[in-house]
Length: 165
Image (tube, rainbow, N blue to C red; front, side, top):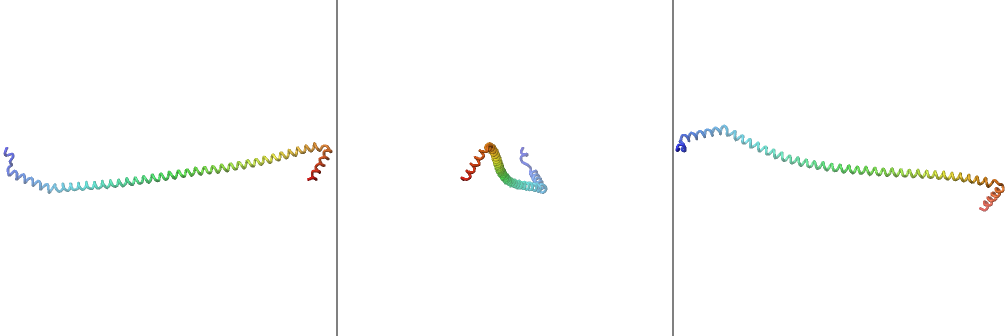
């Protein structure tokens, strides 16, 4: 068992030479490309992190822009709604005023028509009363003046009244 634990000098020498040879070959052939690949990978990771940070900042900027645009759109919508309500109220009030004016004109026109009709009726009534008065007077005179004594008395009476006045 002692030989297994203590290696021979030649074995150690040749193992060291083989290790150094393999190390030299690896350094010349594999170490450079491995380090270059690691460096490239590190650089690509750093670039990816920078791009991710840039994208995150752009997203934050876009979100703030979107929020600002959304607030502007809401403000415009509110202003348009307010303006449309004011226009609707104005239209309604104008329509009411126009209706009041038309109603007042119609009432005045009806009053004038009624007044005209009333005056025509009064004139017609006066004409009818006058006609009836003349007819009554005519009949009375015919009856009163049928007798010649009565005619003389009436003429005398009218003469006396006119001379007194």
